[in-house]
Image (cartoon, rainbow, N blue to C red; front, side, top):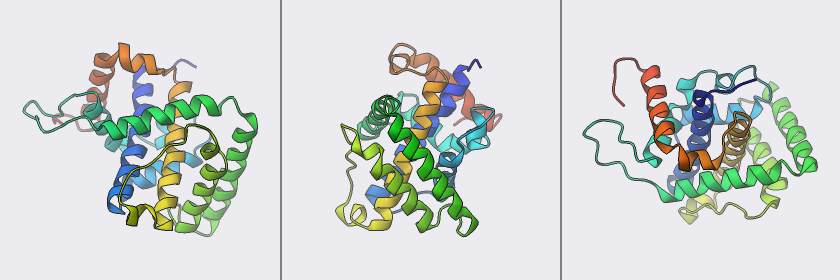
Length: 219
């Protein structure tokens, strides 16, 4: 199946949405609930006929699309001069891409991830998708698999937030969602070189995607 630049932008938005939420939890102990639910739900979307189907609709990763535009240096309104690149979030996103490339070489870890996600999915018969028990299970999947690869992603934030077990689980579950988005991005033909060599094209498509979600408005 051929994938378009739009598909790659949706997948990239998934990466940046999850990593921005990681930042929010680490810094404040909280994160925006709607995009959090979308990111967690994507982990369970093992198979989908379309890229957009992983997130049900492209509008559900608008949080990440805006973050992507910020990181590419694109103001969301003509007079917006307040947006600056967040180096920390970019590092998280790149680290996720690096780990995903390493992960695909370890079939045993991939098998463990699929099994772990299946176990977590079975909990959905008893708990809401973002219940702390489900999140803890997904966090354990990340700890037992992806976290064993080097270099590990070091998340910075307020110690009182990061040391809270529920917050730590949210962060790890979100990193698992970011890895899932990175897998999708690679499957859509995405490479890190494209971000360097086709930055303007990527930025323009990301802006079009936002405009498509809210016709007639500027973001």
